[in-house]
Length: 165
Image 1 (tube, rainbow, N blue to C red):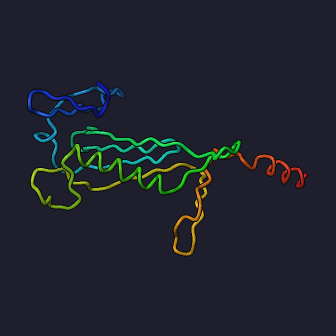
Image 2 (image 1 turned 60 degrees about the vertical axis):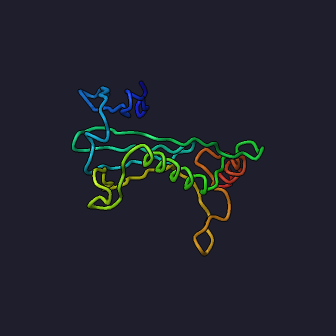
Image 3 (image 1 turned 120 degrees about the vertical axis):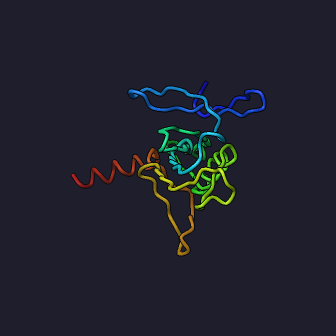
């Protein structure tokens, strides 16, 4: 079974969990509601092709679940162009957090408001490299972001490089 997949065991929802054992992922299936409360952390990776998030439970050394959202970059039919609107990234982060929250008992405050829940103590975010997001005076994007893999201006860059020689 893949990491983070759910299966029904009678009326009891089971979550497939993983722990590290000699650098290998070993599944252990346990009931989330009965065994996992207390502090947890969320890691989010916003990439060129999608956003992924993971919930980690440090006291047990267990990854409790993952969620992802896929998207493409825009070329608008121009050879070498690779762009995305930053709203795509924001929406994807919201989507993966909603997926994690709906499949786990998450609480963002301490002590938990509703009893036996996981408390999110921190969120780490990583993002794609070398993207250019152009903002207006209100810090809002004014166009799609140029991605690290955009080579639309390769010919112009080559011409400018030759001027320097």
